[in-house]
Amino acid sequence: MIDFYFNGEPQSLADLPPDISVLTLLRTRLEATGTKEGCASGDCGACTVAIGEPDAQGILRYHNANACILPAHQLKGCHLVTVEGLSRGNSLHPAQAAMVDCHASQCGFCTPGIVMSLFTLYEAEQAQPSLTPLSQSQLEAALGGNLCRCTGYRPIRDAAQGMLSYPANEPSPAWKEDESLAARVAASAQARQEAADASSPDTAAGEGYHRPTSLSALAALRKRHPEARLVAGATDLWLERTQQLKALPALIDLRGIAELQVLDARDDGLHIGAAVTYARLEPSLDSHFPAFARLLHRFASSQIRHRATLGGNVANASPIGDGPPVLLALDATLTLSGPGGERSLSADDFFLDYRQTAMAPQEVLREIRLPWLPAGRQLKVWKLSKRREDDISAVLGAFCWTMKDGLLGDVRLAFGGMAAIPARARGAEAALEGQPPTEAAFAAAKQALVEDFQPMSDVRGSSDYRRIVAANLLERLRLTITAHSPTADAPSAPAAQVTLDAYAN
Image (cartoon, rainbow, N blue to C red; front, side, top):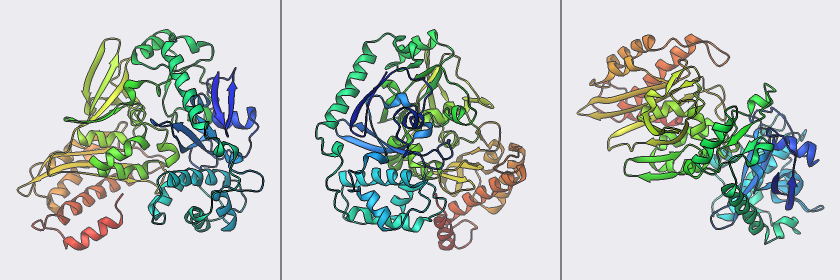
């Protein structure tokens, strides 16, 4: 049973398979066909919908999400809004009206998804009004996951910038006028939580979709259903359903487990629960690890960042995952929880082989700890991909170092896309350790890099390409360091800095 609100109306749907997506639910059960299927992988944004969830004050906050890879069971206790729910009669929502007035739609296939991303941007701006126009970076962040195949982005950008000056549509949709909607959605979410807390681990066994609320309940479920797959954001797992057409008959949803939702700045570093989304994590990273925060806009679209988790990115153990190299560079600590209790290990010891980790069969990643960067220690993260936003890495480099008395120390160079696992370039690190950031030192590091990695060739880049660009990232690191070190044998520091800043992530 899924209890949720759809465009302001309560819904209670039973007998749904565990692996049904929101998109399939919309088009086959709710007969709401305005939401389109494009890529079925979360890349194009044609299927974008808005999800409203109550915050701590009971106010509904909306975010955009890709319906094609969103498990329908995760709608429980939420408000789902689609393009059909934005207007009443001939009265359009400002996002819709601006798209019409700016001629920002041509074939119209991608338009519903674009409108829904604009809707969530509009709602966010209404909640916290700004006196300044939307910046280019805000527009890119809001629309980076929506591809337009024929119109072009200028009129869409014009619509985004202009919609805030439109008066609210009159009359507004019924659900916008319903002051009790937020309270009812919040009550539904609370009832769901209380029912889950009071239930036995097997309550959802008939559906095959389980929602534990504690690590102990998770452990019991995994013991009873060892075949069940774990799901948090589903942004990677669901591709098995949409791209490989695999059935997912048994799923355990981790999003309701309180221990996995911790996000806490402590004396020893930033503690991040494995089910914390990137969107929720971003402000903390921006405050403490800005280089990591800047990566997120290259990492994925806003639709993905609102659902994907750092824990999933790590536990998935992909050799091209963007998060793990940063954890290696920062010397992060991972906490695992299982039948034998908890244990901690360095990120260095977590990745064993292709898609293989140090987790025991019944263990789960509970938390990631990023130690604070001491004064003088620097972090840089650079990603190379075919597309600037929302694309898979060909190579990602994460570099951490300290400069003292003109010499490099505690150098950590980590790469993704260069081996079967995300890994450190230990030979290159050794070549730089204790050396000044000179061309000679970095030439030795580049040579060592050849021995550190033997990358494979695939659709994202050849082995030779990866070797070349990895060495180029080391050169970029040298220029970055020497731009701030006038005594080093570098080209003009101001010119180097301008060049680097122009391509900063």
